[in-house]
Image (cartoon, rainbow, N blue to C red; front, top):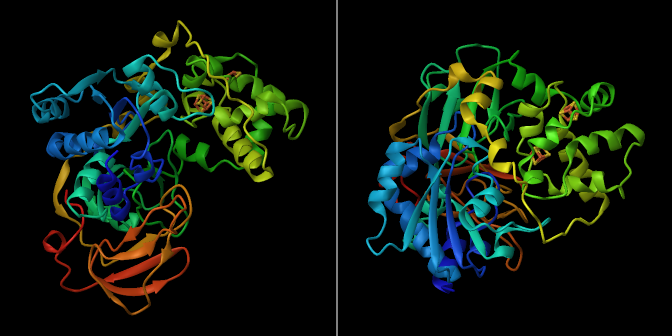
Length: 457
Ligand code: SF4
Ligand code: SF4
């Protein structure tokens, strides 16, 4: 293991950029024989990772080499979709001549980017119930994370990331935005929302969530936002209240099993059967020792069951996510820990083409290119959340009125805990701060990429 790489990743505040936000320095201390670069970007309309691979493949490959050396792996693989020709060619051209890194083309199916599925596709190993990829000797990192690892080793902390803006906007695109940029400001840069009354999904349409009322800033894990009309079915589904979700499930589930038959984790052999969970909640409010309730711990919240499989508009994913949160709140441990798992023979035939999924979601008209725009955005202020990652939130290290330069540390992780640092993503003055967030008002001469520190596009 390379301590230098791990320290550099930690100092730079790198976390899983694909959505999970797990501190990357912790992953880099694992021991594994295979490392995977996850470039699947399998959610409909998302483009940021593909743009990154097409335009800056060397950073991704460099980051992968660093992580491979850090964890002592023999094999390194970049997994990305075959249909993304430009990105495939760019990555292929950036691979070292010694054959030390392989390219693994993926079909255009959802959820190809689920890390358990990627591990199985690349190695034939099944991550155990309740486990993580290092349990089977594999470390998986998103490609944006790997680019940030490459930057980290050169002393550049995480200050920017690519964010795709799609949907009902005049000019969909992908932008290099300082972390903490207001999502409303991003939408304006994409030409503005075409409908005054609209909703915004933060993240992809399958695993994202509705933007909070009053707006929200980007974080290290926000790769895209989607603007939709208020009456779009996805918006209705995401805004349904818990009581309504439960009432519908109890009233109309016909136990057809379609949700279980298409569940990617069930197809890998995990003991998750969403139709039985829906049945279990028919009879009691919350039987916390029931295996089809505790199986919520095995759900990766991919959304396949509710946004594609269920013919009756029931939301097993939402129910399982709520159950999981309640189990955690009550301190109920995960009892599902089987390791000898056999994937279903039909798994291969139950992967859903993304075009069909996009159509089912009512998003086909928004499925357009979102090319990277030149230059880096210059927001007037940024709001840097202290909890952009899994683990303990960072603690602010600055004072109101203090001048900061892009790349300065503004939030520090507690030593010994799982957490990540937060850096100023623009130069300016600390306008306000709390335990939750630090707000920086831009210096008038914020000159973006010419300033010291920070990740470039
Ligand atoms: S697919 Fe829908 S109706 Fe069928 S078992 Fe699952 S939740 Fe019930
Ligand atoms: S969200 Fe649904 S389909 Fe996805 S893992 Fe959970 S139960 Fe399975």
